[in-house]
Amino acid sequence: MQIYKAKDYQDMSRKAANIISAQVILKPDCVLGLATGSSPVGTYQQLIEWYKKGDLDFSRVTSINLDEYRGLPGDNDQSYRYFMNHNLFDHVNIRKECTYVPDGLEPDPQKACAAYEEIIRKSGGVDLQLLGLGHNGHIGFNEPADSFPKETHCVDLTESTIEANKRFFASIDDVPRQAYTMGIGTIMSAKKILIIVSGADKAEILNKVINGPITPQVPASILQLHPDVTVVADEAALSAVTC
Ligand code: F6R
Image (cartoon, rainbow, N blue to C red; front, top):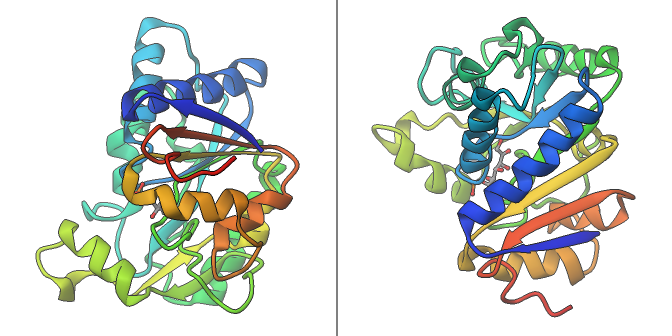
């Protein structure tokens, strides 16, 4: 694992955006695996800024997002499709038809997940996968479990994730109870992985991810086995990392 220490959230975002830009410049028709949440917002803002300056071209890029709530349409402002349009896609020249998010409106989980694996396969695979880190070590919606789920699948959200996400909804009852997410195997098959982590509240879990045993109880710990992982984290998030 290559670990870069950033000063703060803004610095982390700029460093992460640099790595993503390098990917887009070196391989203009690359496949970017993207994430939602608060961690990547600054990275996307930086990419938009560079695009507007004329330094980046997304016209041949394909993007494949990690996950989506089951049951939410893309125009619901809490859907991950809406987040991606709003935070990145609407502001750069990526072709919308080349941006993929699991179909939250497909009621049949098997169909939705198999279709998504097929999209990833047909794209030739993800060149660079961007990840955020959950407080319990989750990546995508792969929560702590007894085993590592392999492919895209439907998950029941844990109470802690429902609790963490309720701030975005009118009431806790409105938080969807299920999501479609890439599996750990899907994530691990990306050629490169970039995980961004910010804040002291993620320090303990980040130390477990980097230095702890590889266990499905800390899903992101599996990244220790990936040959090309870059961690960009701010000082606060790295404060408990022992080496
Ligand atoms: C988002 C995702 C999640 C988040 C994680 C961290 O697509 O799959 O795993 O990356 O929950 O969320 P933030 O960045 O909001 O702390």
